[in-house]
View (tube, rainbow over the protein chains, first blue to last red):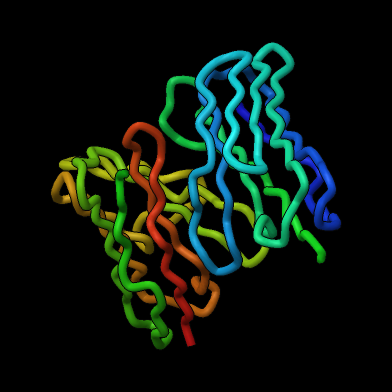
Length: 111
Length: 112
């Protein structure tokens, strides 16, 4: 059974700093998704990573996937307050379309 | 891009009544939709997978008689919380698979 572990679960950082959120998976799989959720809101798609070695960047966020290490990272560069949100990195399990979520990482960027 | 419209966004109901939540795929056909429940400050928990034209598949521990799912067309899935109780208060989110997963805007249900 696929399990998704994110760390840290809570991250408080200063504006302008860099940091990385980690997602570890218990089983190998192909597709990986990163989503952002603001308080009281639904999920906003950030990235879809399709294969080993995939790297995608959008603004101050960069996501990567290492299927051999069963690891995905979301790197934040020069954080700004608007990036404060909870980030999820779900994956599908086996041949199923069902997404399996970790607990999420709540990011707070302080001025 | 793909849009999933979810209504209502907020609903308050009395204990014992039923509430229906709708999810529509606006610009694509969704043969499969997923229903999630999220408690405050927690992750999303998959409740069931809704399949157009067939019965929904419920996750272990989810009461199918309490959470009725209907997927009557390729663009509409509904979740009805029957005989709602305060412990059913939660944030319910639907999603559809279409070149990735698109999530509805969520429904905040409060049962008083």
